[in-house]
Length: 145
Image (cartoon, rainbow, N blue to C red):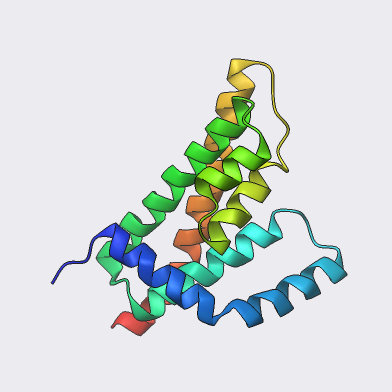
């Protein structure tokens, strides 16, 4: 039976809850090591994508999953560049740990004044999220065969 994106996202949320203690330890180590601000987003998306890849997403669905994350990232950065406050974005998008990480990471990007710079920030942020997702799922394609 084909699964819709909402079911996949719900399963992703459940898998991330199980991995929470590992993520906290890993994030603490990353902070201690002084890694870049985008690492939290990358690690959470990587964990999310790996969880999906290992348990839920056949190869033909990987791009759909990553496209959903891309679109969400674009929406979040569009709101960020429009001047939405952090608290509003967390309320609107922060239902899960990886979505909260995405909102936090969006605030590591400055709010630009020119429309061209705002558009570039949205595009770059969404493409980075998509790349992380696809790259991570690609690492696990052998599990599907």
